[in-house]
Length: 145
Image 1 (cartoon, rainbow, N blue to C red):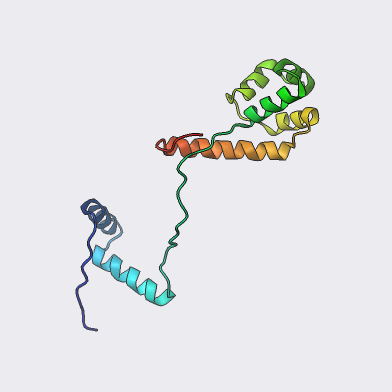
Image 2: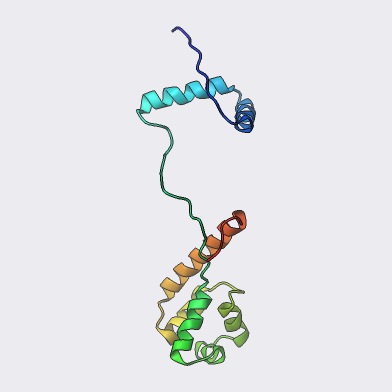
């Protein structure tokens, strides 16, 4: 099959990184682009997703302890009373309310018994909080709300 030349403009650093990657896997960038073109033609689509979904421009860090603190305030009880009713140490409750320790399933069940806040829902909030903390650690450029 006759060959033709195809020129692509790209950032010089991206080109260097592409060349380095291709060398590591035993090919050059021409081979990589030929593989890309053949994949597009074979699959009748780009071999990756293109989306207009925006990246988040902020991170919400809402620990479950803050929600629990609001709930016990509404109930008219303090951390000491919550600790007593949940049969958990005051130190543990204070650390939980201040987001110094993660919520555990055991404590969530006790809090559910006292406040009627669903343990499963609180655990989902804890999981989201931990995911967002990890994301924020990797992406400190995103402001936190």
